[in-house]
Length: 409
Image (cartoon, rainbow, N blue to C red):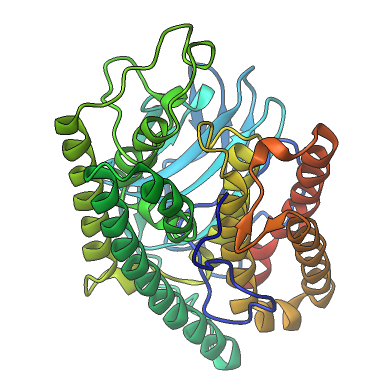
């Protein structure tokens, strides 16, 4: 990669937390129970609902729960990797999720549920709309909000999060405008130089876009994830046009470059979608979606973005700029944790210390692959180096999966 404008954040990152609204888990990590089971709904403990996912069923132990702390304990009894979602009533907005649950494994989704109508969905094979059913959260009348010093710490973390996400969307919008200008004018060299440093702002807040439901597939869908009849748009379509593959990397067919009209069409759509993300994040009601569970779940979600795309080299399959994305996701997970660290320290000092160590270990590995203001291309890494990075991500994922429960319950 050529030298580019610095985008990586120096350590330590005790700054504004970047977090999202999704909770995901590593398919390779061991199941670690971290939530007590209490279905009483009396406000004395979380309500735990079991979920059994198979190839053709998504069976919940209950179709409703009282408002407050809720744990969905999801077990994959099928043969394919599965996901579980809690969706808004319209079925579009993701309230929270747990992804990449391997066969025979269980994962907990911890959240603070507000009264209202929702949908649940299991997605065996992680494709399609999933197996959906209505779900209701009734008003328990119980006050599960934190109090005292913990309440003050969480309030500071959520306020900082909103400010950080707004700032990242502002930088993303400005960078995307520059990228689009270069790309549509035919200055491919400049567009290639802008591609990775602009996308880091997206990667730091991607779970937020996922929470809106429709923006993430429009902006960041990979070609390998396209469903039959689905139009491909967004960053990776333009990535492929900028790093045009040889036939053997394109299904045996010669790549057909986008026409000037197509370039303008898809670049303009990317810019418009980025503007929509900016507008949604700057809306007056955006802060209402942020609480301690969203922060903790977002930290794990961002790390699992690394495990499912970056460490495999599948995210940036044409440009091989995966390490830029890798660093952005890790930064986001770390600052999310550090925004809540005082709460974790008070409740589980050992967990706080373990997370400090595991984040530092992973960052040390990433620092070894820097080049100028950026990183080496992912294809420069050996198989052993990729395995070492994957092991460090796995080691961090296990304690990070306990963050939400440590803070909320």
